Image 1 (cartoon, rainbow, N blue to C red):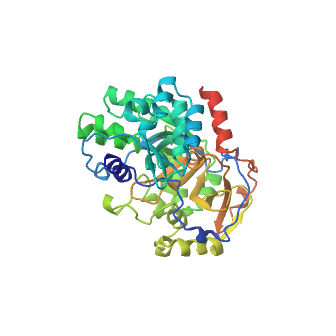
Image 2: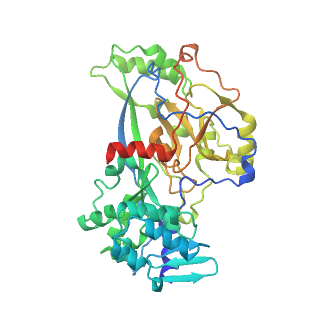
Image 3: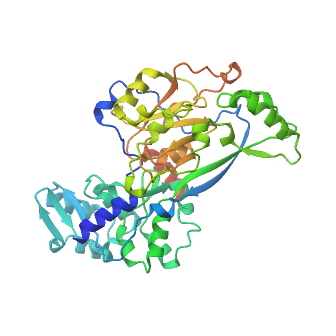
Length: 430
């Protein structure tokens, strides 16, 4: 009973995993598989101008957090169709203390069912796991959809883990326990132990924790100009998304001001992106699946009127197949960055803006905002145990970049697997 409640509660407060594909497999036929690329996309020419970055975190609106009743919750780990010997081998090889291993191998904690085995580890054991053991066991549990908290964890880029819980207003005891339950998966720091909600002292603290865990990393990007700035290449670059008649007089006015003023680059983007930046879809939480996912977002980027066909997975895949051309060189502003898995299934789409920044919506529900993100942070949501392929897609009929922008240096072609990238990052962190 408590397990079923916990599972339903997790779905309510977490939503759907941002990396899951919203398309049925039949929708992917014909989508091209392109070259590997590096997350280091920045050309030394920087035709977009002198951009300055500030990391920010976005929390979901308070009204998007449902009421969270206080009740005792116990963790339960499900192993679908695994033989007892397989479970024993996992527990024997994991980074457990002898006390933890003895407790988890106690078959009195095990329960068989028609489709597998489940273990009730108890919070004392589950919450005392080392970070490595939690990673080993929870990564395995994520293979089975019955383990929703492990399949769809809260996550944050590993490179910014310290920013995840910073300035949250949570009580020190809550922070300490939450930090001890964070584990690593690919390039993400993850949290799955929903049972923590039952030990928090108040509904306000539970709400505060959910809002903190649901944070998205974003970047605030400004363009800085001064009297020495060469404006023409900057105007040429940004007029691809906003008319020169708007950008040229405005930038010239800024350049005449003292003190090297800045302007947020949202100013230069089409109305679709400009009006949605750092916001959530409208609507109530009980209507989470708005259809406004990453593909709908990326393919509507230049549209002054929303193309409602893009809410249909089959139709938008057909439009992507017939209405876009794959680009082999450096992405240009407005190009769609399509991430594909080893089976050529697109798992994410976002829009390249400038330098190493994309406009993205990491998920199809109302719990996911529209953001500007660094490419490396965006990739951390989708790279886990397999290499990703990237197709750079340009809408047919769009003008080619100005000739002055075609000389951008070619980008590196190889994207490491998530495991390789994580190992590289571990050498820097550990």
